[in-house]
Length: 76
Length: 366
Image (cartoon, rainbow over all chains, first blue to last red; front, side, top):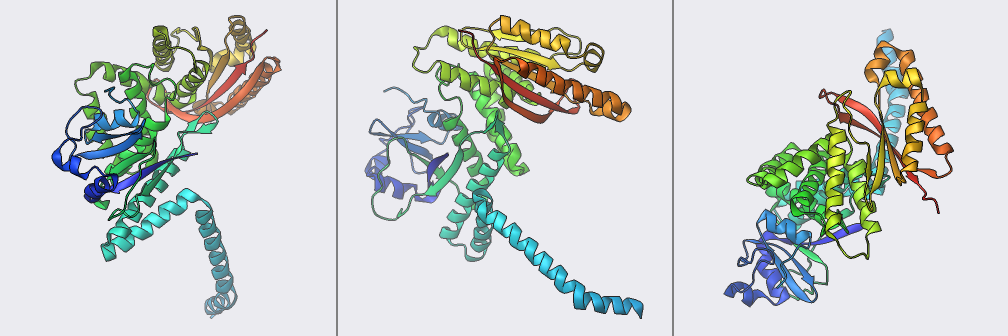
């Protein structure tokens, strides 16, 4: 049994957001971390997942990343 | 002249055979690597690192990063035992293809992780080790357990995986950037962490605590969460902590009986007791635990390396008696052996010591 993680190179984060159709939101600063609520940028982006159809994001803070991976997401 | 002849003969006959033997061994070694998915990933990673250092191409760099993570974390994971299973699930890192153009549909439950360049590989390894622990451990109990406790369990599990990676740079990065900052200013987390570290040092973390949490999670599946469930988990940690920090001659509780977790521990630590009284007290202890309707018994036997050096016969007798104890326990038709694991731990005097942990499950009477 294995857990598959999709990876994106740190310098290609903007391209990932283009592929996800979220590039404009990234540029406008409307994307927020699902844990702490801080604005997601191309430099502080750490992880993404889809839950109940919505794309959720995590910023670069270790605590946010850990909670995000454990799916302890904010209910909003 | 004779020596010269020997050299000539060895060149004529010896060296070809030696070369064939060496070639044969090399083929076996290469086959072993190719057949082992994780070892071959590690080697692929090394080859791509060499290719990247020459070409500086991103394609090579990315292949090095993913193969190196897959190989190192999974090989480390194979050295950790979760009872009779491996802990936790293996990790597989796959780059998102066609990143320059095209679309990508992030599937439900799929995770995308941002990885750093090759020169920050220690950071990538720590991130993925953390991710795999967070995604696969404490399943079914994570929402019950209070956050500082679950964090302490996760941190120690990540530490165990990274320790097996055997790269001090990675461990240093983890301790300075994750482990210690997590503890700073968080008294509750530090307190739980101290307990988990003690439990881990005595070898009871992956062999008892995580096993029992997994078993607890299975028992409460589909049951509405209640506040006492968190207390049951915290009580288990405190129970194991008391055993882990037990001093010679100190009495500590050896049974933990709650609504869902009902475990008993039999410590076989005192040589003189075993040699003078035999297995009788331990068998009686088991009967007593059965009466209390305990459903799992752990027998922890500490090896007697020092005794073996001074009195080899006494050590032999001790080993025989522990084998008799195992048979006597299994004579009870309700008892089944789940696993037996040998490990090394740090004793109360700070010495590295061999030990054995045997888990017996007890079928409940109708």
